[in-house]
Image (cartoon, rainbow, N blue to C red):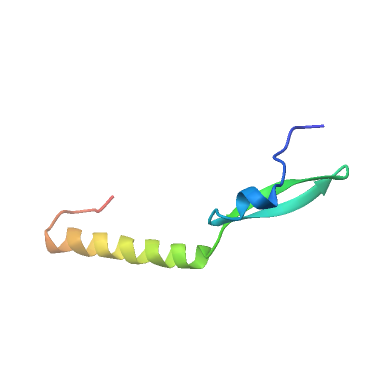
Amino acid sequence: MSPSLEFYDKVSNDLPIKPVATKIHDVTGIAAVELDQSDKHDLVLKYFRAYIADLCQQFNGGHPG
């Protein structure tokens, strides 16, 4: 059996993530980790990218990347 992360509820309560639990061979583990409020993170990143692109255009900086 391959090693996996064990799922501890108390440890992950204070973190801004939510584990996606799975059960393999009657052992509870974590299949994936998702950020809480990931839609808000995506929105903030899009606004930040647009802001940087706007600054580059205002100062004739060329491509922002």
